[in-house]
Amino acid sequence: MKNITVFTVLVINFFCTQPVMALDNETYAVTLSPRFGMVYGQAEEIVYPYNTIAPMLSQLLWDINSVFYYGFLLELSRLDPREKWGFFAGFSLRNGIPGSSGFIENRDWQSTIHADLTDYSIHDNHIRELMLLDFAAGVSFPLNRWLFKTSVNVSFIRLSFFGTDGQGEYARQSGSLFHPITDDPDVLLFSGKVISYTQEWLYIAPAFSIGYFFRENFLAELSFIVTPLILCNALDEHKGSYAWDVKNQAEALTRNAQFRDYMQGGIMLEPGLMISYVIDRRFTVFWEISWRYINRTRGIAYSRNPIGFGNYFPALEPSGAGLSGLHNGIGLKVTL
Image (cartoon, rainbow, N blue to C red; front, side, top):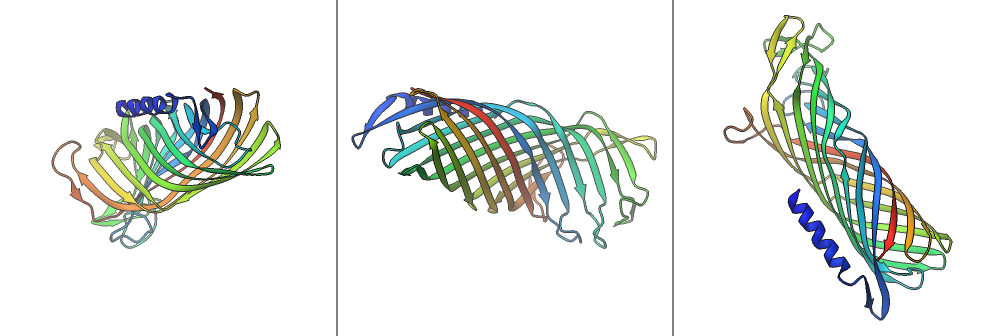
């Protein structure tokens, strides 16, 4: 986080050394936009099967329920993009406010002879970090009341969660065979921190937008971003805590293990809408909404047991990850 803060300060200094500059004899300006909003979505953690029957060996769903964020958008662009074509560049930071955020659900399909669910647990989910960094640079083209933009975007996302308390149901075993979870499962009650998970995403993407000036001071813009150029690193830690075994009326020790995943590829989509109202030459208010969706990212996993000790060993099962989030926010654009 310290490195991100230093980078942000450098970017602001770069943009603001000359708030108004001449480029090809046309006037450009820097704008700074404080922004506030909310994210609603879900992060997905997947383990694909090696020798089991079901399409997945394990799936964990981490809720991102109404997480509020604050941040800013820093842009360099033409003062009046309606006059003629021009360049633009922007840097954006959104930082989530930590807190409780729905649930984390963990499902496993461990049987080699049937595809029924064998394990299910649910815990209270908590957001530790939610940070989104975006950089874009491109060109805009006006045509009567229309404004067209094309750009290249680079994005970095960091999410961190932990799950606490809750309960789980686990299928009975006959040797190495698993019964379905509906057949008299074991029930565990958890207390305290049980599991944590961190995702880091990096991708580069082309972006396109089309805007329409309903009036001189009222602009609506539709945008679309899509790319398969995705990298994702993830860290999963099962804390090795004690749980209460309801059936046997005794304490049970849960798994103590650490997993690192390195994944790439898949698909990222982000449609968006921004509506801007120009108050005067210096101030513009805007409302923005977008949906960011990443899926089919796959890779390799490494594990060690217990947490923090020994070497990592490659797992036979491929890893996967996904992310979806609806971003809804408002901001005030100030021309410097």
